[in-house]
Length: 372
Image 1 (cartoon, rainbow, N blue to C red):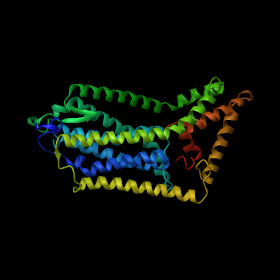
Image 2: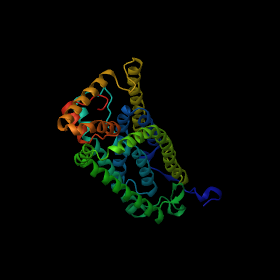
Image 3: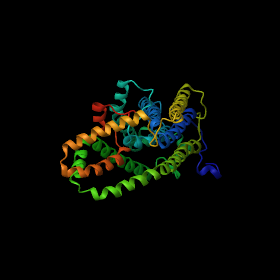
Image 4: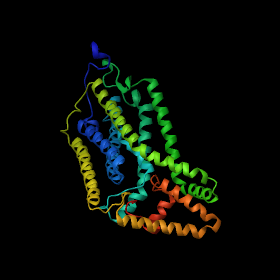
């Protein structure tokens, strides 16, 4: 080892896999993460278009690294480690997608396409999440120094950044990551169970509302929801910037510390394709925001951000819902209708596309454009 910075920088160089984490691919992922955070915090209608690009990059990298390891093209720890970190950075947008309604730009008007996006969204995300978790557990438990090997064993240990430089083959790091991934599996299982049984949950909530035993808590709940809406964007911005900085450091520092070469140009076709996907998503975001700006400038939006036609559809949908509820409720129970309406309004922003009420609105009533 050399003196000075040799504690964190290896003496020997290593030719990295540019087709997995070259400069073009890394830049495309950083751009994707930034515009995803921007769209999610400031324009929910554009979020799903950007998430589609994220899914393409995520699946492409998963296919690439899985194929490369299976065929023996990648046999080095640090190659697979950096790729895993990049995939995890793309994956950072996924949790928000589980909890938010699907918004599609108006130019995607084909009904079969919209129906496919709605019906397959959670399962597409679930497939990607299962694949990522399975690969990550395999890499940390069975890949490092087992199926894979160090780049230059005689030049020192490979290191990655976890706040401080850490040896890639550290047992403490391996245990920590495996425990963390296990917790992710538990959380993922809870999400899927919650998604698979929305009808039972909504029936129980409906019964509690109609019986009125939680009515005294509704006012406090609605007030808390309003405050949550005010602070949510601030927290999302702070966390988004922090996560991007951490992600960039976690990828770029190991490349420097391990003297990885051949991954700092965009000359290869694989890197150009990934970079073009990110640039195309920037263009898609610009188009979506352009549509919104045209509507705003035309003066057809109300204070709630809906067009006049959308507002009319929402009123028709709400009136039909209210009428059906009133027909099922007795005279003594109608006093609880206002309470239930408050709760539904408070929950509407975070209603998932998998809920039975959301599916009923799609299949039976024709969901308004601002929802679908």
